[in-house]
Image (cartoon, rainbow, N blue to C red; front, side):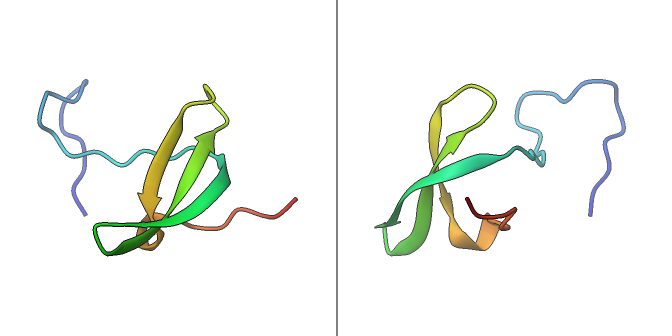
Amino acid sequence: MYGVTQADPCKGDRVQVETLGTVVDVEERAGVNGALIELDDDGHQVWVPFRFLMAAGRH
């Protein structure tokens, strides 16, 4: 695991982002299973591979 060593990330830096969202659809893209997520923060939708998801609860 890498730690941040400066005040602000620079372009090209790898970072971990954590946010909550709701699964809108489950689909495969380029042979990878994932989920289309609607983010709670701003309502945007992003597709995320299953291996990067962690369940936070069900409605």
